[in-house]
Length: 164
Image (cartoon, rainbow, N blue to C red; front, side, top):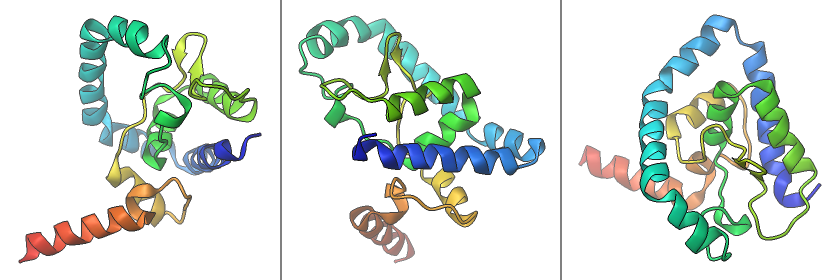
């Protein structure tokens, strides 16, 4: 396995174990808490498919000029892992794990499968969910929102500005 993929795989396994240990009612509460976000992402996805998809594929991805779906253009945040674990089937998650373990390298994003992106909900920032997992005692280097020195300074500055 490529070292680059170790963090996302460890985070996915960690989240799966944690969610499996929760009562079904708590998992449902978590799913409900991300529902507004999922609705927003659904609207964004529809817009992207309708107005950008063909152009993105032809002008960017196929020519290897894409900043979105290439190996270096993809950042996996911990909350993306959490949301996908909440919203994906075990089969979906197994495909992601297999891609991380058997990554052949190359230009394309490790999450790019034969039918497109393997993520059920494509990665994006989600601070509150990361906080929930941190409070539960789970910690991974993918928790950029809470562990990145730069983002921590930005959040501290924002908090200080709102107090003053």
